[in-house]
Image (cartoon, rainbow, N blue to C red; front, top):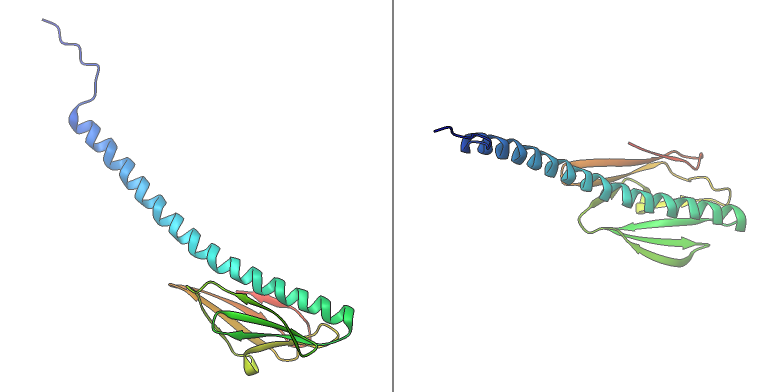
Length: 140
């Protein structure tokens, strides 16, 4: 009697399933790290957009403005009048070292005081560093 062995053994199947499981779990960890970075970068983009918009408005309307930080809330003021409130993600811890926790922009679009905004989420930390007089920032 001749046996026809055209299938996989139980042991071969278990080894393949083990390898596939390991690859799957490694990819889940990578996706989690990607989402953490995305959350921080999304909020940095919002802060940067508000700052750039404030600069543009200051230059075009020849007046000053500032962005005030309150926990995870940003208040935008222009010409000493309140404009709008923006809420950042509550999962983030945001700290600044600006005087009065505000970024001030003069009528030329320049920053009046240098400072740093630190954004923390889990073990990730990113900083927005604002240079005095230049009206620019960099992200580290």
